[in-house]
Image (cartoon, rainbow, N blue to C red):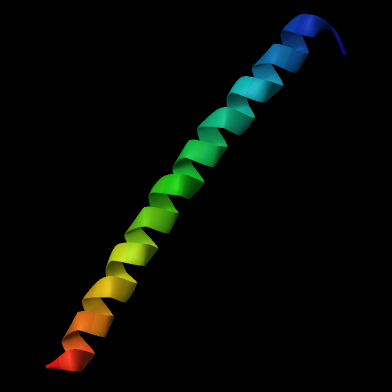
Length: 40
């Protein structure tokens, strides 16, 4: 694998990590919402 292909792969992985971080934040917000709902 040449350097260019390696860099492209790294960029793909970075984008995937960003997508997962967003999904995690959404899950955390849902959990907080559910916890707040239970307290009522």
